[in-house]
Length: 518
Ligand code: XMP
Image 1 (cartoon, protein in one colour):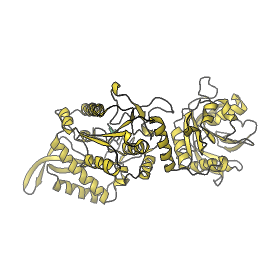
Image 2 (tube, protein in one colour; image 1 turned 180 degrees about the horizontal axis):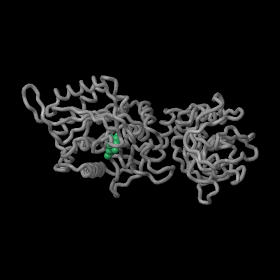
Image 3 (cartoon, protein in one colour; image 1 turned 90 degrees about the vertical axis):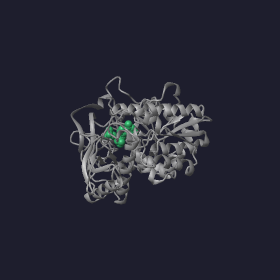
Image 4 (tube, protein in one colour; image 1 turned 45 degrees about the vertical axis):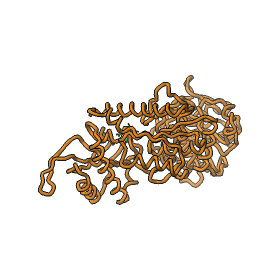
């Protein structure tokens, strides 16, 4: 085991029992300025103590302590002499360890969702909190009675032991989920546990994350070389800069300009990374190749496949011509990680430009942002000196404008769309609305309509404005942009973009629509 893992830092190990919320727990711990690492729930006490944590969190999970094949903890973890906090299934594991399996039973009434919690007595875990709280429950089993040595700290109508602590040992269990936003004061409880019970000082921050990530990248890459596909998006940008800090010129970045980017985007991206960040960037102008491959194709799925396929070929050809690389840097962030748990095989970001590399190009992946959420990636980026304009730009799909020019994609339509799109972005920024919106763009449907400009009849294209608010792109609502702003955007587009005589605003949410039109 490397030094990296044996340094006794202010570290919590989170043992993952297959919880939906493991990464959320890690994130909350980071919010409390404490470093955490996630390990599989069934790691041995030896493996865990090799990482020198000062405390353990046992997560929830789908298992049941009285099912033989349920993922269980090594009993040795309770002998490590460090504080343990069990959450949901983790709480039941603690009860089963100290009180035997019989102390856990199926709940007579399952509790899911918001539940009122009543605190019993005083404890550092609930320091400064009101006596009744709404908490988030999601469980089928529960602890019927506290095991010997434990006292009840909180209960709810359906859960007699909703929180418990050992009188002498630093063992805590909570049946509810303090990590989710629906639990009142959940973060305060975690902070109380981390600071008041374990004794962390809360000195960890994004700078520490960067230092740690750099060490880890160095350890993984050794004296090898790495290749990174830059897309202009925040995730690949932050990953590239981070890896560059770790291994310098042994990183080569490839930027494939497929000609389906927003106005001036390609130039801005390459200039920024090469000039400002001193990265070794190879830029490939493949726009003609992509346009050629897309000629005559109007089916959305075929267009996507063509862009994906061409992208991989161009990237692959470029990589081959640049020589041999040992590693591929990917900007995978936590929401992209399909598999749960750590240590499973790496998943290539399926939504990503570099997705599905050919077999012969398989390189080991370096994914320094794998455990972070988007807002954390932005904070890391800011700390690395990446400008706001790159960090806060709206998400952009891999197939680019090919899915926003509906029907056949041509160079002329792309130019028209780019101009209209740039005006929409400029006006949203001018109205100070850009940052309140998850994504905004213009779509060019494959249709013409009649208009009148001056005294002339026109027969020209329609530009559709799309702007949505969202948390994570899974659901979205159309943004309530003031009509005065829509008015300016529409007038400017009609006046400044030849070939457009009509502007519409899409007022459909997702579902039933998707954010993109194709
Ligand atoms: P939809 O249109 O499905 O999009 O509501 C959800 C989010 O995903 C983005 N998107 C993509 N991103 N490659 C990407 O990298 C793609 O093929 C792709 N398709 C959609 C979309 O812009 C939105 O943010």
